[in-house]
Length: 261
Image (cartoon, rainbow, N blue to C red; front, side, top):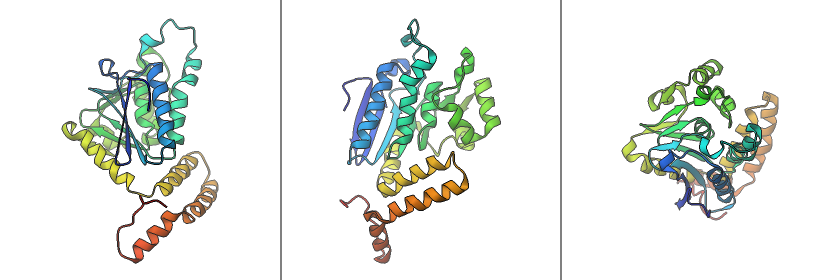
């Protein structure tokens, strides 16, 4: 799937897991990792056998942010670097026609926090933590953090987390709405896989359209959202999944949304 050993790729029961694989650096991101992850997401989107994508990290960390050793001394501006690496990655995640779960197994700091926040669903291990660390080195949060975080926790709380660079524990993250589930460290990967397989059994086309509607609604008026819903509802209603759901309801059985349409 990818020629790079900085990203591990595995598919089980329709769930493709992409594991950031620089554990000695707490999966701090370099260009190779960022490009490999973006390419792997695009490949997953194009693969009909993949119904859900999970992004997680090897070892103790999810992603410790940018590997500063990989950018120091380079003749490239901050803007050029973001536009070449992180921004295409985040746009790919949000535009993917399949649910993306960020499975935060350890520290998510800086751009790693942005990556964690960009998932459609965020599952955390009990020992995970998030730090908007940018202000510690007098930088501005990037890679989508200024868009995602205030929408999850509100402007003032987002500003506080960014200004003070406070560490958010898994318990606090669940309370704030930064994650949907928190699982024990010991069973985390198995719990994430079980959750992802539940999602993989849901109607893939309907979830793709739901994601499209939600993305549009985040920056639209009510009138525009209503119009988008009406348009996408027609696409959903014309799909075989809808007929299967209605038939299963009438027959009082569980729908089979994984069959060949």
